[in-house]
Length: 207
Image 1 (tube, rainbow, N blue to C red):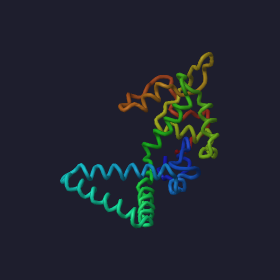
Image 2 (cartoon, one colour):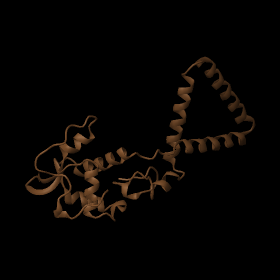
Image 3 (cartoon, rainbow, N blue to C red):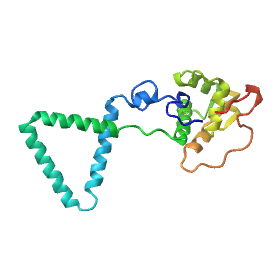
Image 4 (spheres, rainbow, N blue to C red):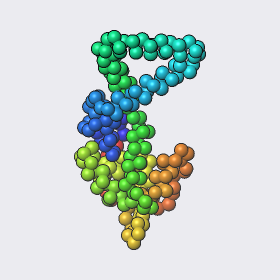
């Protein structure tokens, strides 16, 4: 699985950081959530700067800056507007999302399958294929490539799972997903398990 943030085949499910469209374009839009995230990042940096060494002197410096800002607001409101605009730009730059790592992308796939499963103990593989292929980022992926993605993410595909009265169909169990999402993964279960290389569904290209 590649880690290029512009590779739409990795968005499973496709969730750009901000707005809609390709992840890179969505991340660079002037979006309120990005500005809010940048504001939180700047506030965190400011708190860290104040609470380090020479705290009293830094608090005094902030008090002086606040006093100057208040006087400027009364005497030159236009300068205050320019300062607010500059701060918005700094917040927008600080709110730029960090490109996800390969582990983040794998976990996103596992969480997507877990969300699709809901409260059921398992989900049929056919339902997973249909759900992913209904999304714009995975419409071009056939069953074999989607299966390769699931296997690459560490998801165990069982040859037969039971959901209610229906059984005998390939699927994914909740216990396996819980193991992948847990902080300390357990050993891979053994038994009647299809590791994703069954010739019945065709050859699988590398993810």
